Image (tube, rainbow, N blue to C red; front, side, top):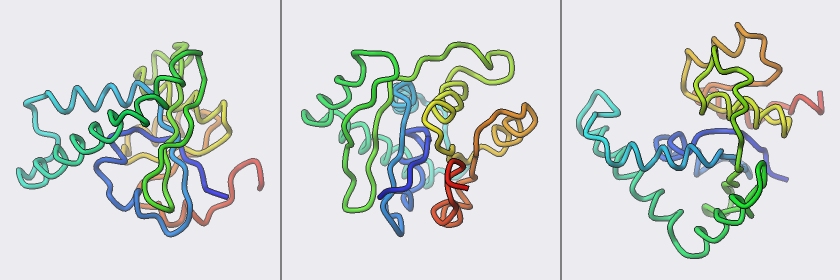
Amino acid sequence: MSRPFVTEAVMVAIYGQLLAPPAPVEYIVPYTTILELYEFQSSADPMMDNATDDQHVKTKINELISYFEEPLNKKKIERALAVPWAKSPAILFGDQASITIVNAMDTAQYGEYFDPIETELILTSQRLGIPILTDQVELIARIIESESPVQVFDIDDFDFAMDDEPLDQV
């Protein structure tokens, strides 16, 4: 059985180790974070401080977009978009990693404290009962501060998160 995490598509593009996990993992990705990849792709603003790192990340974003646009994967994603909160069939990345797209709906439940994508991450995590995986320290702090009923891991703690028991099994 794979270990599920809610995360953003850009995290999968930036952090290559997420696609080479030590054990099976499933990333649940809100569809709006895939749309965000296109914004990053067309933006002239750097994503990273180092020019070489920035070019590498943009290359990885382009590769991920291309992979999502392959006919079979595109069809899987489109199936999820038919109904709110529907999930796509798994899109495989090698033997150990898969991405499932969810048609999350921002209900503005956390609107004043979190942006729409952050809200979708939290609502998806709550709805599915699985932890969030992010590199945004500020987001982690706001989740803790707001006492949101979700579990969240920093990407730097990915190996620990893979070993950790899900909340519903503790």
